[in-house]
Image 1: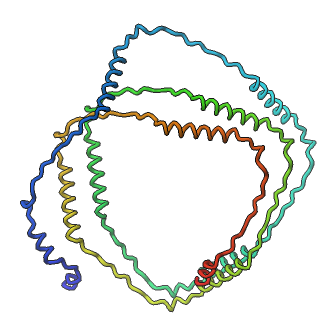
Image 2 (image 1 turned 180 degrees about the vertical axis):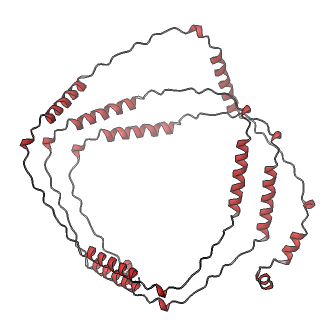
Image 3 (image 1 turned 135 degrees about the horizontal axis):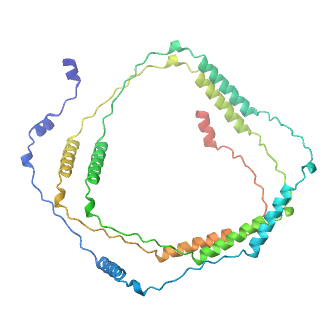
Length: 354
C-alpha cells in the first residue's frame, strides 16, 4: 500500500495552501442590471402600420361585398395537341400490326477477353498474399492482454450536457398561456412573364425532340483504343513488386519489444479557477428565479428582395432560357484523345526511396 501511495502524483504546496485557505466570504456581491432596448423609429412605424391594417380588416363591412358566380370554361385542344395525338395513335397501330416474320435471324458471338500483364501480376501477388496468410505460423505470436480504459468526459462535454438539461427543463416548464393566437394567411403567387415564356420554350423543345426525323442520322462505329504501358510504368511496377516481396519476407525476429507509458497531467491553478467559476455560474442559472422575468412580444419581419436579388434572378432566368433554346445543330463533332502523362523526376526519386 505504501508503494502505491509513493507512485501517486504530488500537489504543489503553494497550490494546496491556497485551496485550503479559500473562504467564500472573500467574494464580492454583485448585482445584475437588466437593460431593455427601446424600439427604433422604423420598428414603431412598422408596428403602427400593422395595427392600422388589422383595424381596417376587423372593421371592414361585409355587406359591401357583391355576390359573384364562377363559370367553368372547357379548354379545347389546340391543333398541335390533335396532331400529337394522331402521331401517337399511328405509332401504336404500327407497333401492334408489326410482322415479326420480317425479322432476320442473327447469331450471337461470345468474345473472351484475355487478361493483360497487369492483371496477371495482380492475381499472382494476391495468391502469394493468401498463401502467406494461410501458412502463417501462429506459434511465433506472443500472448497479449487487453487493458480497458474508461475515459472521463471533458469539460466541454460536461458543459454541453448541463446546457442541454437546462434548455430541456425550460421547454418542459414553459407557460403556454403567454402565447397569443395567430392566423395564417395563404398567398398564391401567379407565374411571372418570364416563367410563362420559359414554359412555352420548354414545350417547343420537347415537341422538336419528339418529332425529330431519325432518318437524317448516320451510323457510327465506336473504336476502342488500348494504350500499352510505357517503360517508366513497367519499371515502376517492377519496383512495386520488389517492395511487396520485401514486406512479405520481412524477418520479424529483428524487431525489439517496446513498452508504452501513460502520463497523467494535473490541472493548473488557472484550470481549477475556471472550473470553479463555471460551476458557480451553472448553479446560479439552475437556481434562477423565473418570476422576475417579464413577458415580451416577438414581431416577425418579412424583408423584401433587394434590387440586386431581383437583377440576379432575372439573369438566371435569361441564362436558363438561353440553355433551353440552344440549337444543338451548330455543334461540331470532335474526337477525344487520351494522354498518359509521364512521371516527373521528383516522383521517380520518391519511388526509388520507397
